[in-house]
Length: 159
Length: 159
DNA sequence: GATTTTCGCTGCGTTGCGCAGTGATTTTTG
DNA sequence: CAAAAATCACTGCGCAACGCAGCGAAAATC
Image (cartoon, rainbow over all chains, first blue to last red):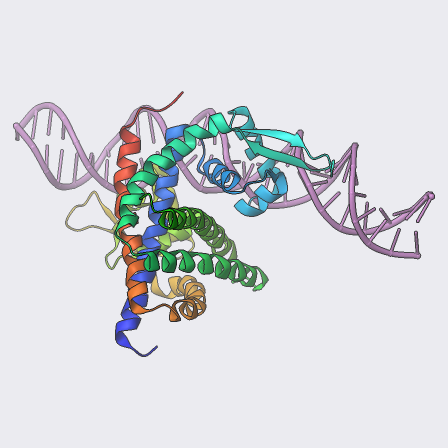
């Protein structure tokens, strides 16, 4: 902890991850702009395709941080643009399942895959241990941010 | 490349990084909500504090992906809320330098630092080599996304 | 020195978004 | 088993962030 070398590594990582996220946001915007969609929609589409099962409107709302009302509008846009379809849930007739349309979504993933190829060249000169370390870091950061969000919500707001 | 183990690691990393970014977006929203700011404003504030020198309005626009008009509005909000000040650039009188207000920004970094502490416990059980690998990965992904954004912009849009 | 470019700023219209309320369905309760 | 409560997706409404186009001022270019 008092190791100056290590402290500098932490510092660098903190700085670099900020830039990393900023770059991601820009990239996401560029993809959205390229497809004529909104960044939020691309984000939702990404989440829809990561999960093997269709999501409900509420789940989309939770995962994107939107209200259910805005999530409904988001699904409206995705449906209108042909990227997703609504299916009533047979087991719970209040719910609506949102399923991505493979052919249409292929257009999006084509952009990602193109990035993926260049991305792989980036990963190629990492060792397997390093890859595991990176993945593990992201997974744990993911979990941590979840608890931190809870903490933030429970905290009193300044002002 | 045809190594199935390695391919699976790539797959995992791709999935995990999507979730990682989604988590970051949510966290950023939570911070913004906590401070009574907009996510974009927090993002800009983050960029302002990462760089040692003040940024111009145009730089903020480029770094956030906004137009200069929207960037002006963003700086308006930051200034009104007391997070930043405008200073005319003596060397180029067209430019306006945007400087973060340390005392006020401390409120924001306090949130980040609190996260930082728990974040360090996350980093603590990585070796120095792993830390370097993670940082390097982010830095290179950062550079890569820049060129990919260029590519996307130059590409013809579908539809 | 005239033209062009770049800078930040400002009206204007669009639209994503949160909020609050609604009906339909499920779950819980007495 | 019926009544009450909770949950789901949806809608009208108002707000405000955003892109766009155009503006003067200043700098760069020829």
